[in-house]
Image 1: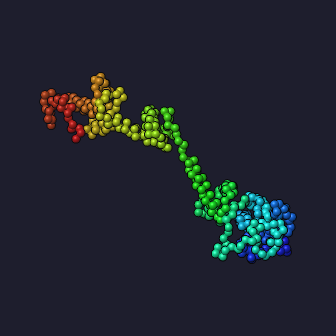
Image 2: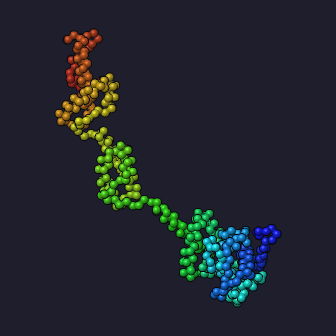
Image 3: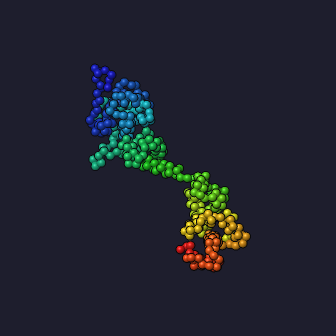
Length: 389
C-alpha cells in the first residue's frame, strides 16, 4: 500500500486468456513484471533481454504473497518455458534475474497484448495439442534453476516427517545429477520426491548406526568398565573373584567368534551366576573339609539351641575349645554345625549332671526323680535328640 492514502494503489490486471493458458497466479506475476520492462533498461545477452528486480520490491507490490509463494510461482513460470531465470531461488537470493523466453523484439509486445504466450523454443509450425490429451505438457530437460513446489514440500513434511530445509538441501545434487544425465521427464517433482525419500532413509539409518556402541576388541587384555566393576562390588561380590573370572569369560566369547554388543552387561550377568553358585557351594557343600581358625556356627545353630533352652552365651564359651580340639585331630567333616551342636549338648548335659549331684544324696533317688544323671552313659547323651522335638 502507498504511504499516502490520497495516492491510490497500482491496480493489478491480467489477461483471462493468458491465465487460462499458464495459470492464474502465473499470469498475475508475469503481467506484473511488465512494469519492469517499462521502467528499466534491458541487458541483451544471448538473444534475450535480461532484467533485474529486487525480492523486496516484489513482496511490497504483491503483499498477498510471501517469499515462498513468490518463489513457487516464479519457478512455475520457468518450468512452463515462459521465463528464463538466471538467479538462484528467491528463498536464498535478494533479486530475481529473468528474461522472457522470446526474442528481444517480441517479448514486451507479447506481455502488453492479451494473446496467449508462446515460448520461442516452440516451432512456429508446431501443431496444436491433441484434444484427447488436453493440458498435457511434453517432456523436457530439467531447468538449471528448477525448484520443487510448495505443495510437494508440505507433502514431504506431513506424510514423511521430512523437514523442509532437509528437502531443499538435496536440490543442488538433484539438479546437477539429472542435468548431467541429459534425460527428459514429464514429472520432475515426482523424481525429486523419490530422491528426497531415499536420502532421508539413508540419513535416518546413519543416525541409528551412530547411536550403536562401537564394537569392542575382545583380547586377553580386556577388562570390564569401571561402571560394571562398581555395580558388581556394590552387590557384595569380591573383587578378586571378579578378576579371576575374566580369562574364562574372554576365552568363551573368543571361541564363539564374536563378542556380544552388550559386553559389560553379559559379564555382569556371568559373574552374578558364578558368584551365586560359589556362595551356595560354600554353605551347602557335601565334601568333607577341615575346620578353619575363624569358623563360626551359623545362625540356625543358635536358633536350635534356643528351642532346646540352652544358653547361647554358654555355647559361645565352648567355641574356642571346639575349634582347637578338631584342628588338633586333623579330621574333615561335611558339617561342622552338627558337630558343634553335639559338643554343646554334651557339655550342657554334663553341667546339669554336676548341679543335680550337688543337690541329692549320692546313690539315692530324690523325690520326684527317676534316677541320677550319672547313670546315663556318654553314648546316650550324644545320641539324645530330644532337643530337636
